[in-house]
Length: 335
Image (cartoon, rainbow, N blue to C red; front, side, top):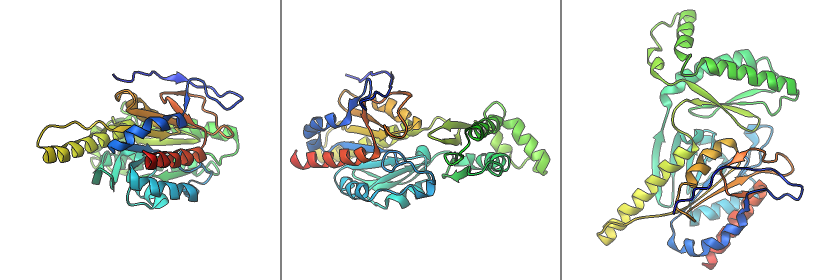
């Protein structure tokens, strides 16, 4: 029976509970039986999920206790991190060779975890010249003029950070200018934009292939705007692709051993905090009942969850994410 839960509006109450969402720790009892099957995949976001969100994006280090728990966790379960950060940045933060890393919102996939060995998978690299054109304009027209704003390159996308821009009016100006520039690179306007750039730089004909692309799009996050290729790929699509690879590998392996057709139905958890994680929550909700668990993370003391979410469960902080993973490990030793 498919899980057809629809998105639900979530509001924060004074006692810290959340309307319509279930405490994720209530999932643990359901896993005592599931763990014996071994078919469990845990997908995790990084910023705001494993690591607290910080003002300086280069300082988003994995807390020591979370690092210890995650290292133990990856020895037991198939563990996948999907982040908007570049693949190499996430790996450098986590430093674990038993985890599959999906950077750039899943546009870059590489790594080894239980049941998965993906040497290199990339989507959207043909958009890099277009991204560079857009980033150049944003740098010159916005970043160089608004103090404490910055661009962070993340593989096949880039991020504009404005958390440290103290003045709210400057934040609003930054957002408007960013969206105005990105609009010039969307599918409707990108060809004219390329033509104008070529005329101004005597670059006629060099970027002809870019005109066949779908342009770029902007995604709003927590005090960030992420500029990505306008293609049908996101964290949800990445989750589906990774899950397909896992199931195919399991079925191939079991089929050879048993010499008959088999079916692998894994249990999937996805834990994330940001708007971009909603694509993954929606995919999790299409899995069979009690096979998919979407868990949204938010911090009562910093940023209440005040958006529509497709998650069914919640954890109130990154600290509780670590506690949840640790308790899941304890359940696995008892099962």
